[in-house]
Image (cartoon, rainbow, N blue to C red; front, side):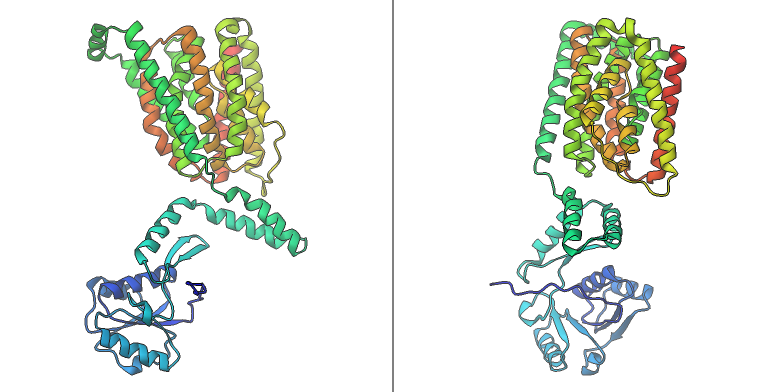
Length: 480
């Protein structure tokens, strides 16, 4: 065995550290100790003090400075010694005196003199990970710390609190408790297929974008038309740029609202229902692709849930789009009536849940049916994926951050399927509206993904319920 280190986490409330040397290394060691416990007792002995170290000392009464050479008396009542000078003879002398008194020593960049190492430390709430390379490569340990800091979600403290409560209240024996905790923490395993989903979504979005541009330039718009269009861009383009930004900001942050906002705006402009739904889905595909990538980056996606919602949602979207194109006029009012009644009930249910003291996670038996219904109604009505899917998952006690992330990424595949049907059946109309929605949505997507989960659960539920109820009432008033 080449690495015989035994990792130990020390309680530092009563520990007293002596740091010999006040230069850059002494500053670094002091900052390292303070990051773990701002109240830790530190004494620094040196003939020179880095200006920033002096500044830190002025802010912490628990740090004592002695501007002089090291003396044996400095070891009195010390628990640990950290040597940071650039003088080998001083380091050896300090180490020898400390060892004679049974005090553990760390010497910067001198593993042979060390009894312990100060590893690179990852801090995420109550979670703490220490990384050591056995003194061989502190730089690698630092890089590993940066990596783990990035991949561990910022909300890990919420998970730790839930697991601690579960452990405290569990009535079973040790083996049963361990088995249940293992089952609960399976979701923390990092998906190895994340990059495959990203590449697939990026390839599909890019291919459709090239197809969209190529078809439009070759069959709908000539070179002279493009020149005239650039010089005379309709004012509606700028309106839709703003609408696309706001709609995607809401949709990406709370999981619904894009179709509702855009459809209402396009109705004001006098656009027909098939063209509304076609334009919205064409634009939403690009913004949802960016949003999906962003949610993956911030760790907001549940892969299993994504599979069920996306696969059945695509089927529903294709059928809904075909239904609208060929039979929409005949069954439009009936579909809107069902959608408004369902989402209104869900909105009321979310308000009740938001004010509950405890919210329990319930099993969803028919995820495929939920995805199919959301995809169908979204394609048919120009909006409804979020109000149906997001609100249902939240009503079942799912955490808002992962609901929003997963639903947003699944929406990319749903809107892609609907867009292909609308595009091949109706072509592209109102190009300035589509382009405005695309640009506004793409700009807002990363911002919305960063906001996901930042809103408190209760506030998120109330905000979603408000949007759902407004959507339901708007649709009902439209058809009566």
